[in-house]
Amino acid sequence: MVSEFETVWTTIPLKGVSLGDRLEVSLGNEIAHLRSDFRLLAARDGLDLFLSKVQTEDVGRADSFLVLRVLQSPLQAVDIPRTAEFLLDALMAFQIIKPIETYGLLFHGTVLPQLELERAFFR
Image (cartoon, rainbow, N blue to C red; front, side, top):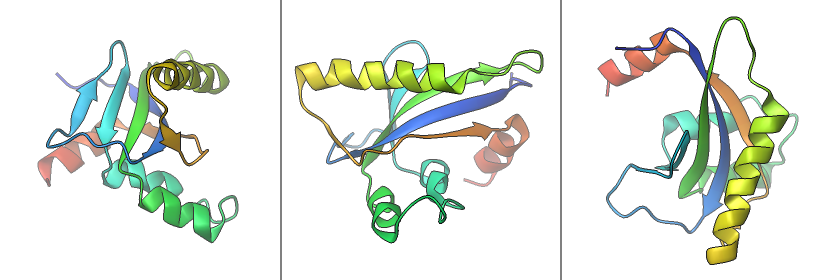
């Protein structure tokens, strides 16, 4: 069953972290490590005013992304600063175990249920 709610994705592009042949590794409640794909790389689209050309190219080279996916109900918006802090805390936990290089960028966006259906259908 598809959720009728939007999902807010907060993402951090990672450098040199391979998932092998896997597309996604679940890391617990709402957090996952995903291989780069069109949804994640779309985070840089439309940000020309905020990203330099080098940053835009860097995100395009990201091997994978650390992602926090939170359902947003129509009655209560997701607290973006809180989700960003939560994801950065998760990244720091990984940094303690093994240093992970990032591009120093964090993105957030909304995935609509009907768009997910369309994208899933045309894969």
